[in-house]
Length: 404
Ligand code: MLT
Image 1 (cartoon, rainbow, N blue to C red):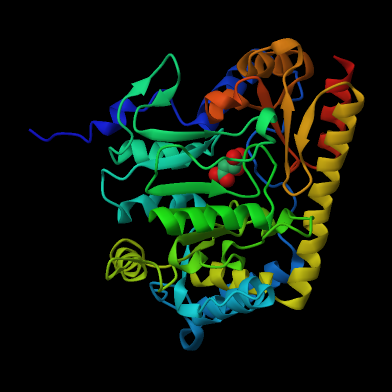
Image 2 (cartoon, protein in one colour; image 1 turned 90 degrees about the horizontal axis):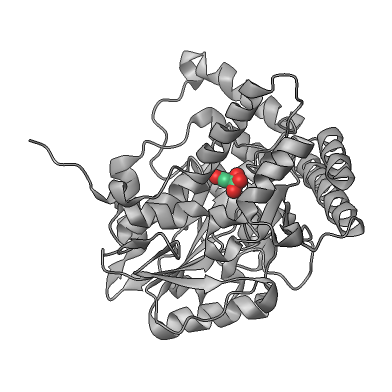
């Protein structure tokens, strides 16, 4: 008789955004006349920029002719995309990253879930609390998190780094020494970030204790402040301690297209074993490359026209963020984020729990957000709204919330 991976049985509930979708679907079924506005999951709403669509059309046509047809993509990504990434995401920021240190993938969600495979089961992970649930859940599935305490909603073997109003949402170096440190900056869900100097402290710490930082930079395009690093490799010494994950979902609207990449520097070694070689081996065995059409779309993200169009798209979402932030502040809410990230993180009013506030908002304003508690115990009492809605829906949702 076969046996299952019993680690899956340890996972409490379903994936956060699946739980929310189920609740919203039940509400919609019971109230079919209500116009729901969804500012929950961070899914984009603006269409893909014209320069990218044009590149995709061209690639589709190439696939229809024998002389320009493309079969399996190279495991690690096409050279044209990896070079464009190096040129625009790294060289311009003074980071010395080579094209063969870039691993093109189908998105940062899968990379952030899969990367833990490189590490032994008894590694201790440290996560910010609240946290993007994928980091913890993927480690639960791998059997790395110990036992779950439903009372505290914490795993015995995970090191939690609370990020709350009291510490300005800045993770503090943990008392216990971790082996793997997950940092998502600018942060999902709090929408806040840290300065480059603060990030340097983490790089120095990781190098000192022999830890690896898994650096999720999915929201990098939304950085507006000068003293914030766009890549962890802007920090000295990061190549010996950090893996960076990037996404095309939020900066280019690829949530339904799927494209991302991981940077695993060749200098990142455990003794004399190269993590770059391990990830290349893993990619070769388990992944057959992102589609040619999608990689051509990714290349167009870096074209002159693509960059100009995406700058406007990012600005559009950030205007939404500004409108939500200022509108809620005026209405008396305590609000964070929304300056370097497309998420607004608010204190729930009158000490409501974040799930109570979710229900209250759904029922009374027909607006969907994300309860902070879904991201971890320190998210209790907070609530996330995304700026990725259309302008019309964003302003309508804001007006409804303000009327409550
Ligand atoms: C979120 O809402 O947190 C994100 O959209 C999730 C994701 O990017 O996978």
